[in-house]
Amino acid sequence: MSGSRSLLVLFGSQSGNAEDVASKVGKAASKYGLEATVKGMDEVTVSDLASQKRIMICCSTWGEGEQPDNAEDLWISANAEDSPLMSGVNFSVLALGDTSYELFCESGKEWDSWLEAKGGFRVNNRVDCDVDYEDLAQAWMDETLARMGAVDDSGTFQEDQVEQVKLNASGADINQSKNSSDAESSSVEISTDGDRSLLILFGSQSGNAEALAAKFAKQSSGYGLEAEVADMDGFDLSSLSGRKRVLIVCSTWGEGEQPDNAEELWIKASSASEGLLAGVNFSVLALGDTSYELFCESGKEWD
Image (cartoon, rainbow, N blue to C red; front, top):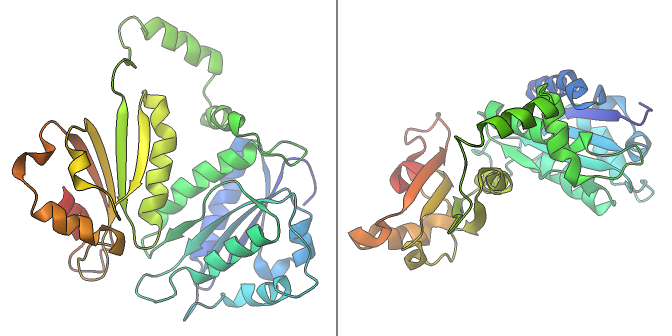
């Protein structure tokens, strides 16, 4: 596990899903200039973790918020009084769970908090996945690998290199891309004059909608937009009037209910005047779970 471009991919898995994601991460890592080693959490020690520059963890939650069987011993060791610091470790965590349980994604949340508390540097926010995890896991993998690829040989994260790493991973030639862009600039050009604001509102129960809203905001500048991310909780509904662009990312909670942080705003919106959003260009991303009858109901309501 040595080497300046090494990446340790750990999985804590009960049913095999976290292991499958970790395997995909390991296979994709070379595109980002990384040399990945994929291991179960029962194959490493806490001291092994402390010696790494880059760690990606895929961890499921078992039962009532418990660590999966193959992660339990490592978690106990991690919480010992003499466990080593994680200074110099760049990390990110993918948590797999099921929102029908009270302690949703608890094991992944525990590893994320522990690594930070021990001095590790979070290069990408934790993503919490429900039973339909594939799309979110793929997005987490792509973004985190690019960020891990931007960790230099000394272990320092170079954020300004992330886009270049993504470009390299895509197989595109930067000079060809630039020449093509120059050739087309006379016929296709995004105007950056005037109001380029984009409001991204999120209604989130488990954190997935919030994480996606933050990701969209980071990418918006590439489209000539100036994004503002806002929590639906406490948001002034009347301020939507006059907005040119609004993107809503909203999950559904329970039996078709608005997430807690969106409930009050939805009550106000339901009784608002019809002309409030005149001139507003909008789109809605609805998150849900097909095992529930009212799939993505909250997002559908906002739409």
